[in-house]
Image 1 (cartoon, helix red, strand yellow):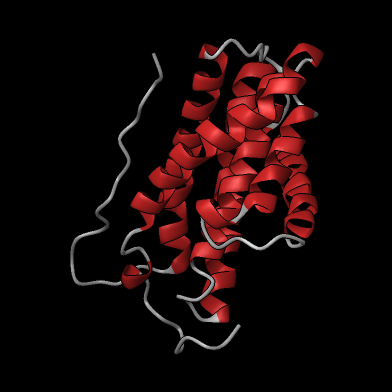
Image 2 (cartoon, one colour; image 1 turned 45 degrees about the horizontal axis):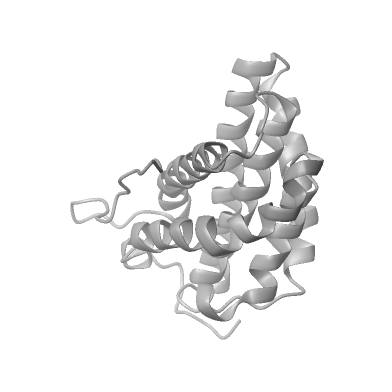
Length: 198
């Protein structure tokens, strides 16, 4: 039976608009939970993801993928300045979640893990930039790229099936949760200037 999580679909109450960094911090925790839940479901589907480096390699790829999706969701909704602050804050906070969890399980300093994650995210950002994202139903190449990354993570026996598992089952479910969490998100951000063409 697949694991399910509830995601926050209503944001901060009160009159004060939040900064892009504040919103990014809240969303980073949701992205971590979605990715962790995806990993649990892949393991339940009999893919062997060993606790340790392989476990965190899987998480890293899926976290980066969701950060890329979140960035594209806000692409037309925020000014260039707010988008940069939001995505930078999101990447940094996700990296902190990753580093803290790796530190707990593997023992090296948080900063070391965080730096490795940010370097991988920057590399992947350049690679994902080659593909357009306009939604799960219309972004085959973008999602296929994640599947190809996951082929490098899993054991040899799972390479044949992991792309289908990721593309057909895991990504649609995870992105639906992310989109639900992001409904109304940009309305909560205190704008630094008017949205501009990007």
